Length: 416
Ligand SMILES: CC(=O)N[C@H]1[C@@H](OP(=O)(O)OP(=O)(O)OC[C@H]2O[C@@H](n3ccc(=O)[nH]c3=O)[C@H](O)[C@@H]2O)O[C@H](CO)[C@@H](O)[C@@H]1O
Ligand SMILES: C=C(OP(=O)(O)O)C(=O)O
Image 1: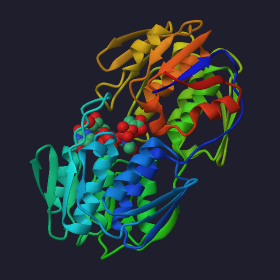
Image 2: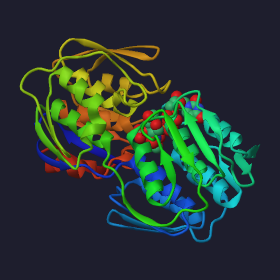
Image 3: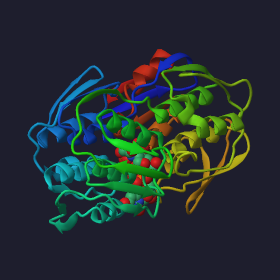
Image 4: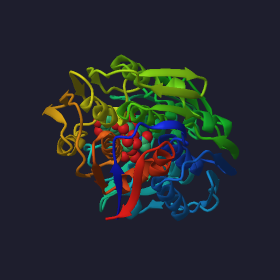
């Protein structure tokens, strides 16, 4: 197992290129099951979750090649079974269920397990697919689904679930007739998925709003499509500039998708300037804690909650962070405390009182964004911080230590 060793206290200066988005690439890869021709995706990040998805697609009968950010995919000989060993390592893999039902009329996909940030059920995915005519049974922990051709339906989501919205859009593109999704999630990654599917011949409108219309088509054709840049990676590097009192320029940055994050960081006192796909972030005085709640897009993203908490730990005053999406996404709090942070937890809220400085220590990463938060804290802390169990980080950040070192961080990867 690898760990990151960080000697903190260096202001980061220079330019970082933002990679393709993990959370856009994963559903787009799985949506390629729906496509009869060859799909070429560009700007795909080289991450463990991407490797896992390509492995899953191969087991499902797709030909998949990954080469320096380009993925070539052909779903030529589809098989309907997604095994537990792969599905359990990555929740997004449940998104193959709808596409397999749409193409084959049957699918067997292991029920994804719970993970460190909450229970994360898929009941809304299944309820929507049932409204489109699928029938499900649970057999030995697997979801076994069958259907004739799926039928368009009017579906109201009880909560604007990101994965659920993506799943139902995918299932609806090959269904007979029109599907209307109400209370749909509006995340930019959903818009990217819909744009990809439309490039393959799907007829989706309203994506990016809470009512999505999908007019089913008979088949989808191959295409070439660039995955959008990763707004959460970009947000993480904005925080890195703030944590280290540095000066960073982010290239290939999804500036518009970062509104909520940029406005909170500005409220804290950071100087952030944007121009098309370039952002610069710097600090010219002390930062202040703020209050914030995580919300579905366009609200503040839960995937940035841990990182902004790290920044508040070294800012002036106190602020309350409320987690509004996942019921157990504060695992980083006890590790931040090991670095000297003052945080009081109360249910879904954390009161952070800023301290003058954090002190390096050995900490343990519990999930993807918690890992990023601990790396950020280590960059600001005095002395040495060892972040252990960084396999979580490798799921979602492309070459994080290489990118950070290129802007001056003293950080290296070692075997634990
Ligand atoms: C691969 C990917 O894109 N993952 C993102 C996606 O996860 P994911 O798609 O799993 O998140 P959801 O938006 O579905 O989950 C939001 C909330 O809805 C609940 N829920 C969801 C589905 C369901 O059937 N029933 C149900 O109760 C969940 O438990 C959670 O409390 O959106 C999250 C919220 O922005 C992000 O943190 C994840 O990074
Ligand atoms: C929670 C995340 O991913 P996943 O939904 O794949 O677990 C994330 O990207 O922060």
